[in-house]
Amino acid sequence: MNYKIAPSILNADFSILRQEVEVVEYAGADFLHLDVIDGLFAPNISFGPSVVESLRKHSNLIFDVHLMIQDPGRYISDFIHAGADMISVHAEGNPHLHRLVYQVKYYGKKVCVAINPATPLTAVQHLITDVDMILLMTVNPGFGGQQFIHNVLPKIKELRELIMNKNASVDIQVDGGITPEEAKLCAEAGANVFVVGSYIYKHESSEDKQKAIADIKNTLKAID
Ligand code: DX5
Ligand code: ZN
Image 1 (cartoon, rainbow, N blue to C red):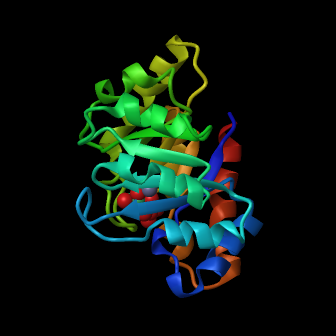
Image 2 (image 1 turned 30 degrees about the vertical axis):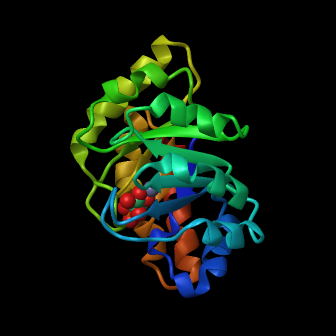
């Protein structure tokens, strides 16, 4: 399986954000997961397109922008112009999810649909052949450092089966409360892209942050 690590900077030190990105890029991260939160779709307020644009100049990572905002269609083009390579939009509160998916694809960018822990797969299963990735939240959106919700595991398994039955090649991303232990459970259930925030950024030193990424990578390597 082609496993990918997507560090989330939500719990990074925003006063030294460039270095916080460089350290995970150097450690072999695949994506940079950028959590955009507006205080309406989810509690907490994070950052907007200008932060993405500033970081874009200093990183070659794939920028994976996770929009946790109301009416995300208003900002898709702004985030793409700021440097997003992939945009995730949530099913919740978006009755025209198919249209949003094609709004992202119009720009030739990768697209992902996301669902919260309590949302059933039926909200996204008819988009499997339209998207590059499906994000199954393993915490309720808003904050880093929350506890992983184990009840999402059967949903991961079921989604992997649905994707296989359609012979599609779609990544399954998990986001929230991921440590090596949870990464293993999610990988065994069928996930292959792992968002990791506080497990990396709770550490002060660059060495410890890099070791945290290595821990996750080694755990996943042992599964193959
Ligand atoms: C939650 C965000 C996550 C989160 C990840 O709203 O989507 O990306 O910050 O952080 P940890 O790994 O600390 O749960
Ligand atoms: Zn996220």
